[in-house]
Image (cartoon, rainbow, N blue to C red):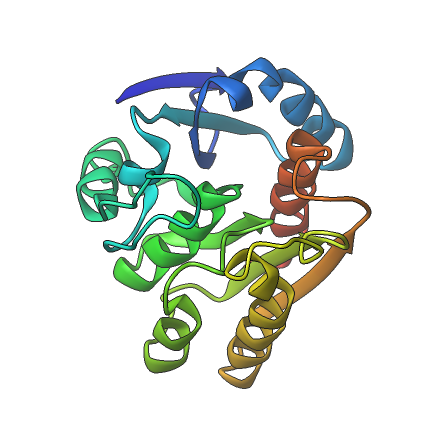
Length: 210
């Protein structure tokens, strides 16, 4: 897994994001949006994963289209990422888009490291993830959730549950007194991924973070 750093490496605020080639094509737009909408100095650590489905899934799950199952290598990915996050003087935030957003949420249940989670259009349709959130305690106080308002308009019987499940997860976190927001963006899952991710990080950076 390669790491690419954007911004001031000496900044106190570090944004941690798992990405693929598609994300990297538009990451400068994401960074520009963040810079224009917060006064925080930051460095974004982009971790490029080798296999999106396998490396970002928290546990094994069957394929929901084709033969692309989820092998559940999330722990291995997280263990590698945290080797880069050893400076205790830094404030770390984790986030991403789609399955990377789900991975970010899951990561914050596993380690007490991140000041907040920026989960833009997270794949919360993933097998039993809503029950995982209910049964466990997240180790951060700040969570941003978003979804496109057309993401549940699909014939796929698994993915069409995404709106129902993200509302449920938002309610669970609020009931656990987590500083959480759920925002609905215009469009389907493939619209403005870079800006949606940037908005998620901006919301976190502009909070009075606990």
